[in-house]
Image 1 (cartoon, rainbow over the protein chains, first blue to last red):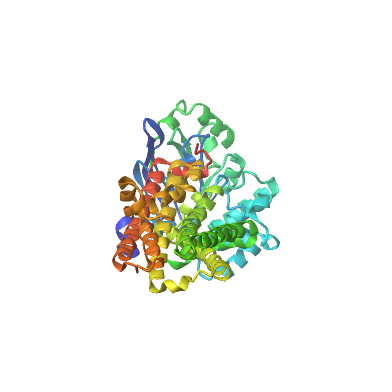
Image 2 (image 1 turned 90 degrees about the vertical axis):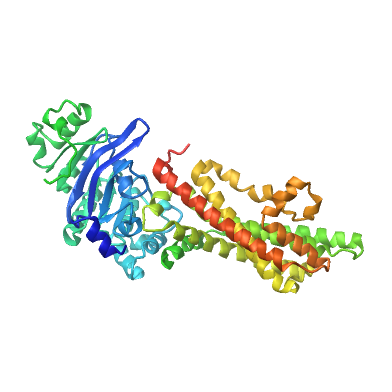
Length: 269
Length: 267
């Protein structure tokens, strides 16, 4: 089946990401259950939740390195299970737990991944990214000896190499100082706005989430408990801030009244 | 399959070799030492035997073939192990890269590194010990092809094993050639072996290479039929190894092993 047919038959929407009824179980242990959501073009969707809530499991499934027990993932309308390579060509990611090879230089890392993603006019693209992410003077420096901030900039440059339609960022600013983190957030917001790429963002920094994300999902025990606008959500649920709401949901996920009873669903906020 | 992702996998290894002499040295040093040691041993045995047997051809030639095979296998496994050591699995496998492209990239790396070793061995063996390698003529083609294919098969199989059992199992991968060598008959005819070992030897493609090498040096000529059979066997082994890697990868994706590899939680 060619790509045009795959898209036409696979999904009516061209949402960068559509996840439907996702579940991952390890024997009796449920990592993720009944998770459905979508990321729209130009949207930054925050995936929030305490440690072990299922955020990284969800991201790993979307990245194709973990097979779900059930449910589907469609990237740009392409079913990941059936069109893995074509679907992942529209995706890229940066995650704190997946550092780039430290024994390659900044330039070599970008060239290596550029070839893997089959990026056209690669040399020109690398030059542009080195300038954009302020990595020119570090071009011949091995990634392993870069500072945390520099490594993050390199990871982000790699993550946008192929101009992805879907970008997954797992705590991208976790090790950055406030100034560097602010610059990265500004850059990512601009990218979503200008290129229309959808971004799935995880973070434990609620200030950052409120400032960056258009919409958030709260995950707990592998289920979506809550979704909405991070700026209005706390007031809607009687919390003074997003952080307070997070803490409440993380500590007592089943005592949140209507929130706790919210079924997992395709989000349409 | 696309060429650029395959080139990317091979290019990474080239970058690493270029930046680190410690990666280049073992590619040439060990094979050179082997040729020197076995070259003098062959020369000594020639002097003892008084010219009745050509040990330079049979013994040194066999060592050269065996080293070529092990370098192909190690070249493939080393390229894979780079991803293990740098915890690079998520970065590599969460991309459009096909498993066939990844394996082809490993093979391309193995070809490059083993050819460097082969050239060094040929130069030394010819210049210092007078091994007339090219005198083997057309027989060289199937012999090198068999060793090359079987090296690839074992390299891919060893990579599958490390992917399945975790990084610590790399120490099980290195001795695989040594484990096979008694059955393959590198230094002695298969007829020397007890029947059960001989039966295993006949299943291993390199055994036909060494049997025919000895026959050629002894002036008995060689068997195209046997060499053809060994090429087919080796090609079959490559297909089986590729299938095994795919199966292990699929299982690692299903069980979560692949994701945990990068999260450094593999025990």
